[in-house]
Length: 474
Image (cartoon, rainbow, N blue to C red; front, side, top):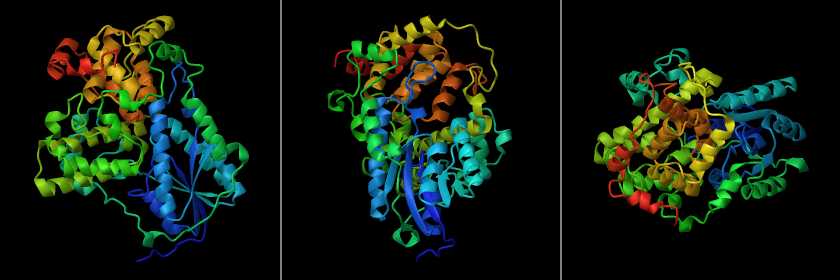
């Protein structure tokens, strides 16, 4: 049954970290409620530049993954008869210009949690309101909508266990909305082709991106990676890794992983016992890269868990997959609630920071880390995997963060910045939330996590196979 048009407006959908059509309620609304519609993705140069610490904000692996995901999204959109335009510029500047040029009346987009992105939203809304244009936005990234939580955002539990118990006491299934499916009959809008100013055209975007992919100009760590023969791009066929061949951008690859993990290999049924593994692709779900960029939604994963449980029975492993999704929710809600405080050195606990190493000493320490000379072979193996693939196990991330903070004396927020650049699955809430947790400045009343690395290596790499696989010479 087709959906009746409820308005007669020309609309534009702006993709952000929601690169999918299915289970995207804001896309559904745009398709159902617009007379004509087009789609755009904006490459914001602020996310591609060198950060304040001299570290590139977006590394090669995430750039490649984004490009793959956009190409996959383009195919999805084309199958519905629409086009996807890619442009370059700051969204609050280029989108009003694009809408004015094309006489677009309404802008649809998914809301974000982080203060930088929220500020862009506010500037954009203000600009569009001044010209009499409308905005229609909504959440697409949560498992549970903020309004459906059993506590208000200003009264969020500061400890995860309290948050989890509060959610579970309500019955998670009663809080999670049904996933949204988009089919041909739900598309009321007609496509229209966007006219685009030359300076922000897709052709120029691709030239800029191609140049930036092979360059780390302006970054002190470019020469470090060059010296160590680690300068990217990397031929992934040469690395001793199963995971990189699975982690390809796009909803298509994400859903292939979903089906394999839950129903073909049934690896989900043993997740609890394998989740701390370091080498095998079946050790963990690997959903995080697709979740971070929005090729996959938390609700899609949740309902596959429920389907798997209906077929094979619930166990500790299926419970623990949802448990991990709740950790993601916990960090996102705190980011949404606390804003800039989430990133401050003192964290949400406002812990006074001891005087740290001077800038030159910190830079030297990070050089040692990226050169795989951190002083610990287990950490070096994890860093080499991260540099060459963009991925690191959860166990590895905890150990590397602990070593950088407590053994190398690197401030936790600089460690989080290193991960921001290198991770293929970077998510601001999860990354900075976990780093502040390890540092003991947020979420952990016990004062942080200083791991015994010798014991960790003995527990999780007892035969040395992981360290051997990621030794300096491959």
